[in-house]
Length: 172
Ligand code: NI
Image (cartoon, rainbow, N blue to C red; front, side):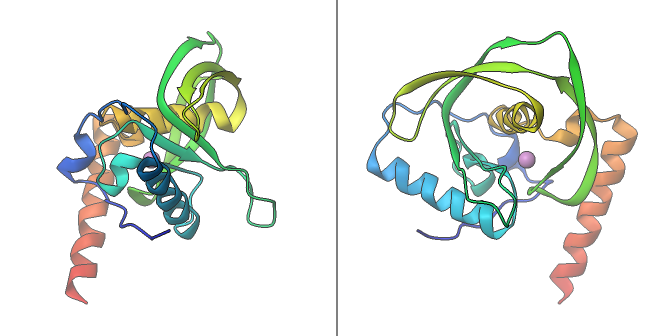
């Protein structure tokens, strides 16, 4: 496994629409292993392949806390087949939007169809943080960040902060 570099906003590579995976191969599983390792190291609870510059429809998620046993989930070509009318609000963050958080409202429960780590088709229903996290990661596949759900005013403010942090780090 190898650590990959996580791209941070604003970056045009995060706006790319990811391509569907044709076949789940060993190479693809190695990529997912790298994604998971990169996500754990960050640390984060979800990562889409496009965030490491690979525009393929692949997501890894692990909601386990540091002191808990790891429980990785893999989603290849995920599609939402049902979303609840009830909505839920969570404070979201993103490894591509470092250190910035805000409330985002999404459907509280979803059902999703996807291929798992072994390329087998799955359909599962998710609620709570898992539902939010999967929807957040699926947004990445369409080139959408959580800050795109906020008002233009808030989004512009966050982008300015990100650029300021980047400039400061470029000086050292
Ligand atoms: Ni994200």
